[in-house]
Length: 325
Image (tube, rainbow, N blue to C red):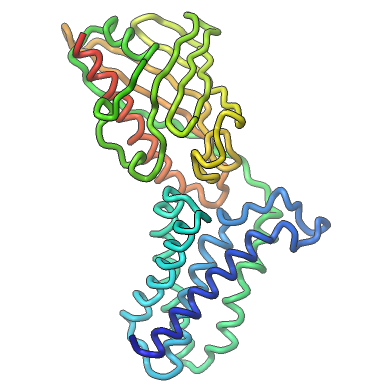
């Protein structure tokens, strides 16, 4: 590896890790008269997820372009190396979970490339040093300003359905009380591959409106579903009851934790409709709440995809069991 590439890689990595440390320390760095520390969202902020990789790209290209010209391809792709190593290090040292790294990495690659291209222009115009300093401090300048704004949570339904070769009453009996769930019944799941725990069993306590269904997942995750609608062989709806004490700290990443600060599920429902004799359609719908403010469009894409993926696994389980009756 050429010396300028090594220097630029070290510089980009160092900037990324230092910015991460400062962002994590930000609640204690800013005066309470300026911004409420509780409102600082840290690594889910625009300042961190957009401006930090932008800065990493700029730093990397700046140190690469000091000795010889950097091509457009290098300006785009060179920043990916420190960004990827930074994320890999965060995973290895348990700073971030696999789910969050997979969700953030495409955004980091994009913003680091944009930062590299911008810095490439300033290197060409010989105005790179002052520009580098301005870009480098942007995340810390923007973080308190961003955190002082108030954002309303957004809620959205995700619907997934499957055709089952079974009658509605057979399907109804298959999803209320579910015991001894085997991995092969759930099928392949991207969300599980990324570290999301699998369901183990669901216990129906009572029947009708007001009764409780308790779901238990891997890694000690447990939560309730309070029944709000009950139409045997047709539909059932519930509201999630999530006790943070029933969600172990290491079971889910902080940013996707059920009942957490940034994201949670609110309501759910099953709907059964008869298509023909011995064939029915089962629909599973879930309402989730997103508290990631400006990240809403990007977070919504991932939330919809992963929730649909998870619901597909649940429906596959019900399909397997209903068709075996």
